[in-house]
Amino acid sequence: MNANISIPKRLKTAGAVVLILAGIKLLLHLLTAGNYGLFVDELYFLACGQHLAWGYVDMPPLTAALARLARLVFADSVAGIHVIPALTGAGLMLEVGWLVKELGGKVFAQLLAGVCVIVAGVFLTVHSYLSMNAVEPLIWLGCAAVLVRLVRTEQNKLWIWFGALAGLGLMNKNTMLMFGASIVIGLLLTPARKWLFNRWFVVGGIIALLIFIPNLIWMIQHQFPMFELLANIRTSGRNVQLNLLQFLGDEVLFLQPLTLPVWLGGLAWYFFHPQGKKFRFLGWTFIIVLGILLITQGRTYYLAPAFPMLLAAGAVWMEGALSSKMAWLKPAYLFILIVGGAITTPLFLPLLSPESYIGYTERLHLRQPKIETFRESALPQLFADRFGWPEMAQVLQKVFQSIPPEEQGKAVILAGNYGQAGAVDFYGPKLGLPRAISGHQNYFYWGLRGYSGDVVIAIGMNSEVLHRYYKDVIYAGQTYHPYAMAYENTPIYICRNPKEPLQDVWGEIKNWN
Image (tube, rainbow, N blue to C red; front, side, top):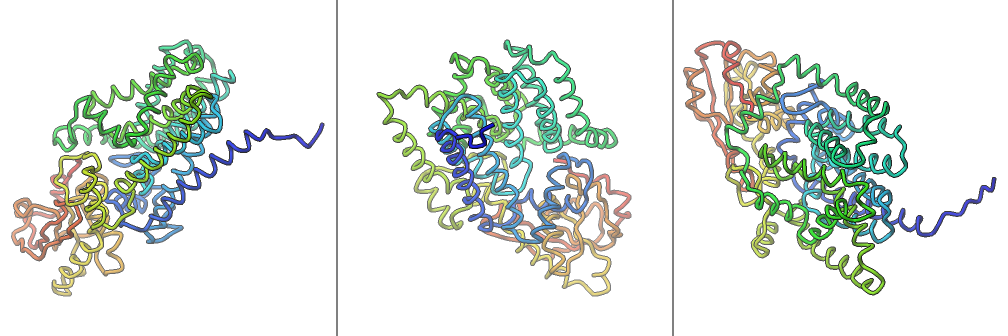
């Protein structure tokens, strides 16, 4: 056999384009990884990483495991903790290039799809901090690409890889159930249903279940706390309520408005183009996921992981639609997309100082879509929730040092939410603070953590609530940061003389919301 196998120049060029785009995506996030502080959810995930388990009130175990890994490798470095989401962003770029190739795209389609992902604001944001949302697009698109390859090559054994990815997705975020069900329904609605009825599909399902079983057992043992949490969120009205047009309007802004022709064209390509009809199940998958989110009043960014498969198809469509007579439109559109992306990138990536960001958005008359009903500061929530945590810990240090030495040994910090508690656990050890307790999310399960609760420094708690449990509740200070979320600027109280042991009323402190 001739060992000097020539590789077509087109393939080498396409591969180079994908690698360069992945490198650009990675570099964007690494260069901005330390610009802002840790996001509120990150503080909680890092705390969960110190309490590894097969499940948590509000998530499967993968994110906590990644947080533990990040802390082991990078210690307390904010930039270091953000390396993992940056790598998942680069991985998404590689997968987009792979799917474009599977769908029949060439160099321009690779380039266009990759640029669309890079400029999409939602991916700029989710790949800038550690969370399950950084990993989720990687898994969803990987599942879609495996199925496209299965249909194209008629290799049923690829269900094994789909099952492995789906199992990992279930260990990352519960919305994988929604995506997996939508995929199956999409297949049933198209001729591709024939790929469901074979033993390899069953094997893939068994693999996914085996990976998921530890988390499933944990949820059964804890009476499925996620259901209670979701019910509480709906009752509280915490999420912004949107109708169909408002929901889609936010998606257009999240994806960068100039990418609209690409992902909308991709949806149409799956349904109507002769080349795309065999993959129509992905079009149905997107529509079903959208419908589920509208019915359940899900947040707009929950749909984000489904867009890369539309962007890949739209890039293939646009590559073919722009014939030689209109070839000049290809570089023209790419140029406009890059310029437009450069303009909107500071809206979603922690690139500017807060002062510069505020001035920039005022000139553009644009802001990030609002996802919760909480009152924001001068910054949108996805940025504001990265400010004020070290300063809050420093104020708590002053309060802690103000109490008599004999009380310091038994004092504990009671936090109203997991961000405040996570900030105490992350920044507190260097400041000499005790650990935090809280009734919020999984902190509730961790209980009093060995403290009696006789002396409590409370933050983020209403004084009226505290008076239910303590005879003496004294105002001791105030946290404040101009760019933090408004509700994080909160009073601090010192509580003494419990009316009952805190352990006995701990169930009343529970706050799953």
